[in-house]
Length: 243
Image 1 (spheres, rainbow, N blue to C red):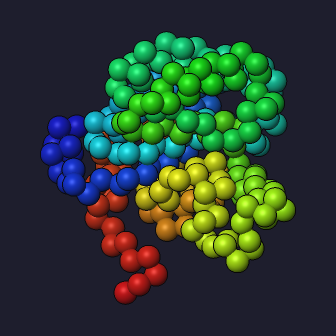
Image 2 (image 1 turned 60 degrees about the vertical axis):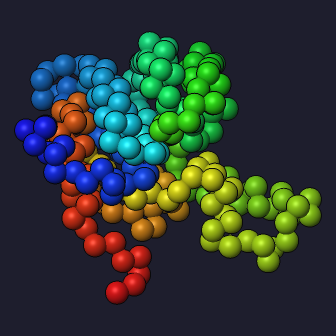
């Protein structure tokens, strides 16, 4: 089935920037009478696989919603486990990311991330900064609204320091003040887990994104699910407000 789906994809028309809301880890674990951590652990395996398959398809930017600004409301034990899991997978996958020419970047405010997690993610960014293949954006302590406020503060600072004038500010130039500075807008947003909302993820960047929702829980989201999403994208008529 995977090969059949892959054969249907037009590799000259894959989305340049794909964003994924990784939803359903907890429900996947609950259905199997596992602790929630087991769902996150299995979900991280899917991230590793989807990064590789996305790169193989020729997707240039992949943004994954790893930890939102709202996720701090979860039980402390779950948050701690998620941070430890992030460190573990970044460390064991770093060599593969470097070998596959993937450039790791982060979206969000890392200042309040636990030191060990922050150090691991910063090392991944530093060690892959010269890679020229797919860019992997890991959104951690990220929120779309906070991203916009972050950008506004940058604009105000540059206007105050006379680096730019207020007349220089446009919808296009403002994008360079966001965490995704100098990256293209999202072409395809995928959300697993059956929910149909964007949950404060990359609000400015998804203005004309094609939205793809699937009931598949994230730990079950394997390469065939990615191919289905890309095929759906290729069957959409993107008009960007035109006819």
